[in-house]
Length: 503
Image (cartoon, rainbow, N blue to C red):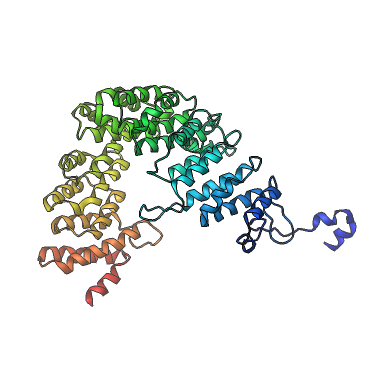
């Protein structure tokens, strides 16, 4: 290196490698000083750091406008009333980030539980919203709607509701379908999810806020009727995915109109069919007037969008349990493609212990235990998470059907975990299940690096517990045989359980 430096003195600086440094960019004002700042100090600091970016210099990094806004947000959480009053003194020319910081700070100060006292009055919150809504170009729409959404049940006056309507219909964001654009790493923004993009846009978040307002007070529907009609025709697919929730709220007021609007809403693109609030609308509208949405269900089932197919299959399977008109559409779902069958299995598995439809769900679930698809079989096995809620006879039927299907390792894992947590008084069936489980996990039960080792711990507990609890010689013999087999393959956890039994 010395020789190279002598030969190339002009390159010396480039050959010196500076160590990399990393630090947190804090606010431009120290925290201990910030606690002592007067309102005048805050206004002066806002003006001083407006438009300033953080600077890298020797010592701690020095923050600028954005870091001061974050500090303002934190201070607002501590003393919300003071900073609401300060917002009234702030000039319109100050950066939007400061107004947004106060709005977010107020939202974060609202307790999660209704029993706790609110940090500010509704009148103060309304005053803050009016102040910020009056800013030129109205730049704080998302922060305003977030504050309103965090304060459910507040008697918001009509002008606040109308302000949210303005953001939902007039604000330019979003201008493009960003969820369809490359993010620069080979994937689309928001992973190609229109709802995620809508949720993070001004018009989309405002539409969701309006939905919450209508859910809270259905009488607001008439005030918002014209707004909803406009939103149904919003040019953005991302925004429409959020408007679907507003139509769910509208079902509580005018079912035929809500369904008519919904048909117009989803007509623009099949990408909407797989979004979460579209599925919610199908569920609640289906209970009110299934024939009116049957054609939409069929469109979803035939869609190239797998999320739409899954949503429709799940909802029609659920609706058919109570709504007779949905049964003809549910029958082909149970024998449809893998996506449909898995969705149906999910519905029946979740509801096996339901007091009204549980018996039918258990009957419909049985064929899915032997489905050709492993994913469908695994989904059906989730029913055993509800085993403790069933009677002994019901448990026996479900376990028998499961064992007859010759389950694979993943499905068996679910059942073994449930059996360890919820003892079942069916020793013969439990012995049968344990024999199959031990056979399935022989190659993995003693290898800590394999998934089967975790199941081995559960199996060890079940086998030893069953041996200790039973007085039946046949069951004891079965358990001893299983223990011998598990010892032969070094099942993890078995030695510890046997030591515990000896004690």
